[in-house]
Length: 239
Image: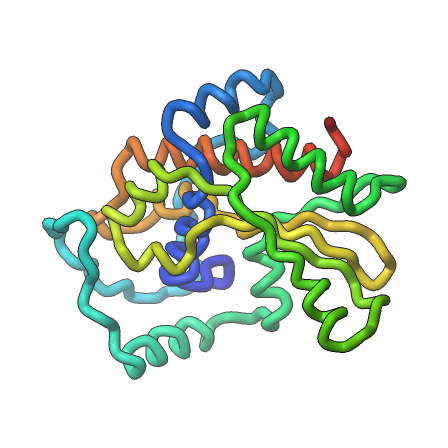
């Protein structure tokens, strides 16, 4: 479907987001924030297929041993899956990447450092742990000597308990951990905050019976809510 690039991408987005703090501490922190959710309702009805496409049967319900790797998918099978999806995909590469991004522009007058400080303040307020930063632009300046290179930094937030649940579900989730929020300057010196859109409600429309647990789904919703608040706080300069 045009609005679904494929199960692989959806699972990837879910994984990236869930590396953030969850569990009881994060849930209580998000609630203590006292602000209404700015996200859509946590109920997403399944959409009908736009074409008369025959959907193959899904795999049956499987027993899974926690913290184990699945058998690797061959490069040929992966390529066949992706090329089949791309055959009905009308979007350019830039449009596909933009579809996966949640982004907010910072208010006029806020400096890059203002945005970063506001994010960290909000994360601390709602019990989301800041675990690292990658100032990519500094490496570019050091290599090229061009001090006018646009500023871009990646900020990581993580919660060990939610991450552990994800790894128990699938060790392959490790490639997406921890979650990042990017703060970037564009060509017009505007500041933007971006992260992957990891709305787990997408998975509710899947016919595959091998679903995440209801508990993990609820934690994912809490995490998505918290990340959105962190980004909005940064964009608005809320200290």
